[in-house]
Length: 442
Image (tube, rainbow, N blue to C red; front, top):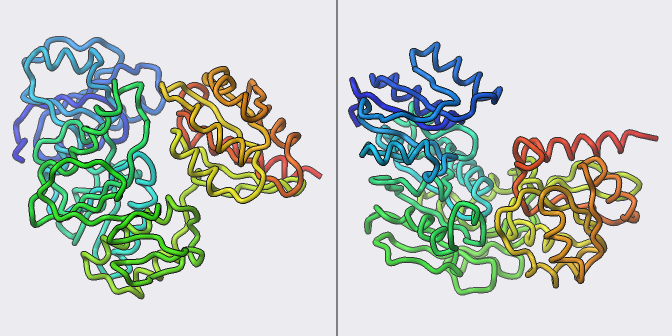
């Protein structure tokens, strides 16, 4: 992609937008970045950094007619319906997503991983397994390192492993992974998508440009479009599949590979994450021994069913990454002791009533915080006692009072964090700090 001398506007000054702007500037483009946020400290810091790179940054203003630009780049977090984007579209400006733009500078094959849940764990696992097999690899995308930053090193890599969201896939044109992975699909982001079908179509974009020389690793329970790629199936739910969980073992095309209890990852959902990584490893001819060693050594990232402390015999689990119903359900299914659930957050338009039977089975009480407190209490109150809390600190104290020695307090909100916190990491960090402070008290 030749951008030398081109005039480009980048919309959104998150991490991906910042790295996209820097990449374009380094490739010779004249770059302007626009973001409606004017009083966000992180955005202001990024703006100053970009200005030092000779990039113009406009914050907190309405977009004017933009005939002076050759094309625009959308950051993943920018909703295409906002005026910031619509003004550009009305001006007839070509728009690319950050994923698409960065792809055009990538010089190595790509493994792209999507799904409602489990993307980050599977991306990390896949990267670790490939590295254990001697492959020069790097993980990027939603996992932390923006794809636009990672492509700078792509000429020295054998493979790039990318975590991709539905938001990123909405705007692809030529993006083509050698291996696509689609882990699962459950209700989420219905505050952005009008229907589940619209959300599903966005996920299907990952297969759009693959050919018969490529591979698609997919959950056996998914509804899928027709695709050119060679399909490989995974399942931990007892469905026929090429890679499956059977009697506690990860099984690859009929061969027992690894007993799940030897790893640090519990639950059927994590079995499917490992099966996907194992399938990628096989396509890259990673030895069984190297793959097994990497999967056994892997430990989950923070905020993903992370044990953060124990107070008076009560174990506290931080699952702040659970921002939708499916993630909450999987966390509950993984619990083997009585649970006091701490849930709630921003309303994303999801229906939580289907969790009543599982809550009745697993939870002795629920403590609720945030915007969804009343809706969740109405949805679950007939199945389990529900108690509101005004703050996270109050919720932790109330959960401890409701729990007995041997119980688990599970912080698995099932909702996004933006009503009370900066993001799910901030939410989980605050929960961990509260628990650890309580654990230190005599």
